[in-house]
Length: 388
Image 1 (cartoon, rainbow, N blue to C red):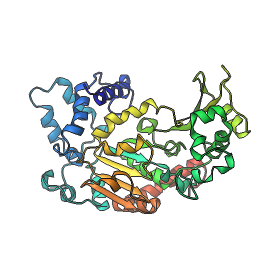
Image 2 (image 1 turned 120 degrees about the vertical axis):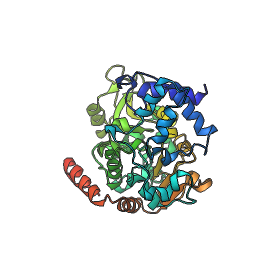
Image 3 (image 1 turned 90 degrees about the vertical axis):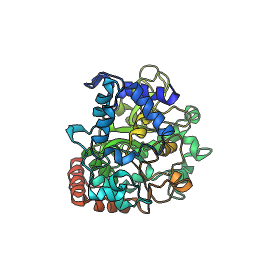
């Protein structure tokens, strides 16, 4: 079994196909061969499976494969486990979807548009959407991104007296002098910022049962604050929601940690006396174990939605290449970046410009404008105020 295949098995054993812990699910099997075959198909069968959204139009193809001679008994159960929650079945091919995918899925449209992506989502032809989110989705909430010249964090860290901007996020420098990072961290105190319309669009997409997973580079926790459950999130670079000791690795009480930070004190572990820090990933640290889910999620995705990222930080950036070549990839960003700039695919779609306006345009094409407004009003009411 290849390395990617073994990682897929580990991820499936830990969380199961839907992201819940495997032992909490009713089905008590580990689809090792299915995981291995899915990952092999992502490379060896590129472009031959006619995957992407086509695989979601009706259950006929899946049922036929499950009944093929030689399939083990668990294969049908594995296919069933990939169905959307609540027993909903993908709809049969409509005229709109056929116009995007080709008649019967046999012909491919040369170039997709934002309208085409909206048609696929609205028709529920894409029900395993993987989202990749960067700092750009939080800037409308008032949080700067990292790399924008003049306004980004890296352009405004001189006041913390660090030798170079990235040093504030390096583990070795933190051990040498944690005060610059902790002073900066005060600006991201949990609850200071609130989700915006982009977060709530992703929440609405989740509420409709179409999000397989949301991978975020953000450490601000606004995806959680918008109501997206933790089981659907992979916070690739960690979060300010929790803190741990850098020596004994015990979890630190959040209230005590932030009380120290806000009073400009270096927080220490109550057990061993080591310095505590938020559970965000510094340069030089490993990504969270949950990040391994990508080896299962991306080969299963039927739409990749990437928003507000410069795609300059690895290994997160390379995930854009992990979906099958037949899967539509939509980039919504202020610039064309990553594979959309270097080596675009036939089913790539780019929406460049202000991210809020781009999301509002997609929402309008989906016919969800009033529904999204109602969600924002309801959720911001719970938070006790209005978003920007």
